[in-house]
Amino acid sequence: MEIFLSNYNEMLRYERDMDQLRALALWITLYKRDPPISSLPQPTEYVFELIKFYSQDFASEIVDNGHISSDALGRFHSSLFSVNNILGITQEDITRASEQQRYRNSGFWEMRRVIGQFGDVAEAAIKDRVTHIITAAVSGCIIGEYLGLIMSKKFQHPLPVDHMVFSRSGIQPVNGYLPENLSLSGEHILIADDAVMETYTSRVMIAKIKEMNPQAIISLMTIDIDPDTKKSGYLDQFAHVYTFDE
Image 1 (cartoon, rainbow, N blue to C red):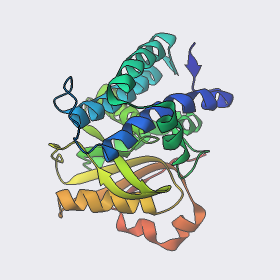
Image 2 (image 1 turned 60 degrees about the horizontal axis):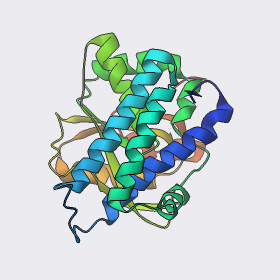
Image 3 (image 1 turned 180 degrees about the vertical axis):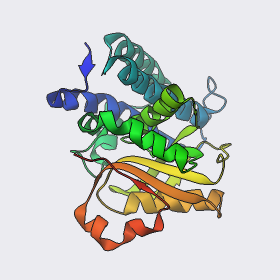
């Protein structure tokens, strides 16, 4: 069954699939390399690649068709069934990952409200010489990949897009994780998320990016910003803040 981005009521179906990716993200933060997984020599890197692959696949479906096709969803479900068995991810793990979201009413489907403006944001980010997109996984994954595809397809300006996952204390993100051998591309890093309703997540992301490159210039792209966060002056630390008009 296809999922249409324009139909708000279908967000519940999107959420079930996003919970599968959230469980993968949670697994990365909990895996201690013991016992080893014989069929996966580098299991955490493999799981990062899965999150990347399906985020990009879903974003590409939206770019090309305006919805996520039944074929794409079928490939996703088939792959995740096998991967979950290998990694030992259970339905309880998926439920736990879902419950650890800070905001359960936000998600990448909110891009439907402003999807026509992504070209303007892409053009502005290119003009401002953004060099690497880092998303807040998993709600920001498809949004970041979508922006990257618009940059590449519409403006012939491809950029790397990678996804940061978080260990948590309850729902609070406390540490950010990126693929082990990742090097940031260039100096201007764009954080992409669906919503900035608090400062905890972006603080963790900034800390991780600065750990990797203390000289990094950091900008932010988001669809929704909490009014109190906007008024607080917190956003002043970003080189650029890309938002959308509604």
